[in-house]
Image 1 (tube, rainbow, N blue to C red):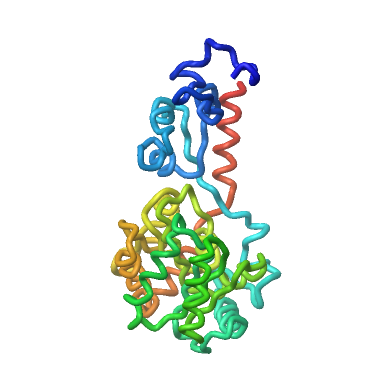
Image 2: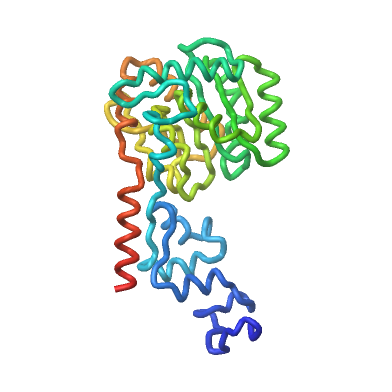
Length: 299
């Protein structure tokens, strides 16, 4: 610690010391005027042993300085009314272009040309944290459901192999895009009906918000930023902005997807799609909260 220029009087459990060593992250937490993370629920979760990575006690002691401000969507980049990557522009009031985007996606990825079939998209890292293994394990439980699945991403080599195998095993129904370019991700979100985000834990996540902006209803695990940005739909689809499941298990995920499939077949689906597209998921409110925080600690 001497080589770092840290005075000895700071080397104690309430200072920079962490199990006999110097922990620079802890140092930042202890001496900061404010601490932010990217969702309100995650701000609470990291104060627990399960998700605090050993620093939960420090974070809990600094709870009054800890603020969760959700991530948001950059409308200059993710906006179906101006997106240059998609074949047709659309918005909440006239979503007809989304059908053209879906047809184009089916053609591009060589999926069966069945527009009446819901398209589910997973656009995350292929990692256990993102729950991709849960999705793969859930597929046998969903075999009787008529849907197409698009997997886009990269990650754990074993999970990449599982994605490749799923596409080979179910041609026309499962497509895998390895290391997708950004325009491809835009086309996938625009053409999808459902975005699935089964993360075991999730500081915020953004593809559920991209999905809402583009009229793809999110299905997510009720954790972190997912539970902050998705309101679980009621049975009549009168309220809600997606579908949540409580347990990070393939059975719970399958149940939530089946709820979404039932909703897709309902005459209320267009109203749900319009409702989520009308959400304000842009940066204005979050940016204002950051501005107010910075002003409060520099005044």
